[in-house]
Length: 105
Image 1 (cartoon, rainbow, N blue to C red):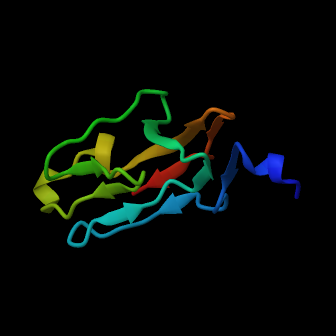
Image 2 (cartoon, rainbow, N blue to C red; image 1 turned 120 degrees about the vertical axis):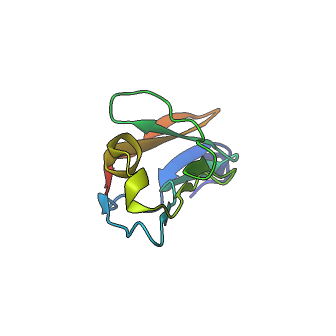
Image 3 (cartoon, one colour; image 1 turned 90 degrees about the horizontal axis):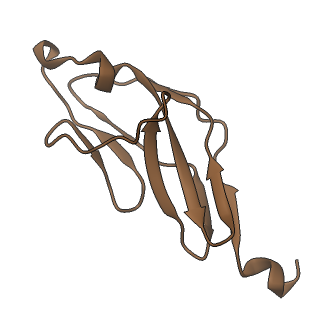
């Protein structure tokens, strides 16, 4: 690897994540499987292409790009949040990459 190759790059650190199954009593954490040099901006989207937003106490995207689904009572189940397909993107000066879809249920 030449030193100039390290100036800007984007790469997947885990490209095999396709499904996350979690219990409503525990919630889940899903890391965005991408990284890069210089540091990347990580964002999560629904499979429809709509960027997701934080829902206090229900869904949160941490600054490090990890998507968190909080524990919830069964009566609060929302299929748009708790049983949906997501993907993340990583972007820096070298470009933008998109993860494969991850079904969270």
